[in-house]
Length: 567
Image (cartoon, rainbow, N blue to C red; front, top):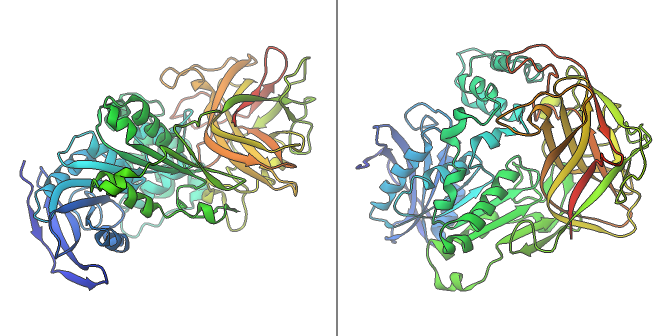
């Protein structure tokens, strides 16, 4: 396949102390003739250097600042609009063409006179996923990638425990699906409450076929196969820098990608060429210190680009001095004491899975209830706790304020106090800690539950309660009851029967200081970050709802607990 290009505009020059940077906009033809707008930033006095490529649906022209940094560091920087976005031709079909378009673009790059034939890719989220998609096509010349906060399985991007990240994908597609002229979006607060989920696009205001498709395929079946790359990662011979935050909805995916490459790569050298940087961030704050309502201090303000420069000098330039410097396979941020720690793997070495058991006298509702959390397991029968999960009044993902309506729920750390005063939230708190509690790894909740409906959701949060009463969420997970055994083979629940379930709360590292309390919150929804469970088991096209009475049991033989990787 021969890729061609056409110059669209004249050169733009900018003078710096380090390089005379030239910007050239060209049109790169893909194998089907569709032309993609592409900007090339380079020092005109330098040829035959490695190339850093970013492919984005979010406007390639916004890369000018970082592009100039890369050129000054000795690279050519190439920024391209993905198919069907901004100045590129074609129609966007989210992710469906990115593998072959990435291959064709890299092939074109390696044939240019300013390229030495070695290419690295950077970017996060969508822009990170296109790196994995190009990588599994094995394009000649791709030598290193730096996927930030992204997926290798698109299903796991959108679904967790059988629940879909509703506001995320609805908002993204509303902003990336053409709407009829003159049509304005309806109130998103109302739209996100629409059932069945196949009608959410109509509730927003115009047809969005991709949204319908994603929301009506809740199981990882054949619909998702083309965008499931995970099984192909071990075949790659490719250094990768993985960057993500604990509060990012991609945290599990990014950490899993690192672990797969480090532990399962067929090539022994590739296993040694993986690095994970795991910070206290959410999706929009990577590299920043302020995340939602918490300032994690100056240490959290990481220059991610500088980390990328070091990685690319090592693996793309093959700089001898850079290669001689050792690097930690894992750098993770410990929240609370706000320091970076290094490890050889994730979870870090030396952690111990430690259970903290739920207790109560049957009235754990609200933070004024009698729910307790202890390392000692119940030795006698205790009354179960119950709450009513009403889909018409879902528990918000975070407290609603005048400045933060329910549609604007955030993923990051915020004071949970207002939610913990709701009667449909169970609260279990430890005594004030007599000594610091430090943990790092993946957190799980193992609960014994029952419900009077054929299906229900369980949302679990691990919370750090400060001496002043401020309660900050550290990790969160959700599980839809019907998927307790398998995402592929859902099983409805029998009313009144007690089931043991495991809720994945994802990766987390924190140090709770002396005097703080460890808390576990349990409820039936995390709306609208995830869709509501109607509790009816009507199926994805049903539009009826029912109130579910959900119970959590804690007694010998039914030891509900949270499991922390304690250091």
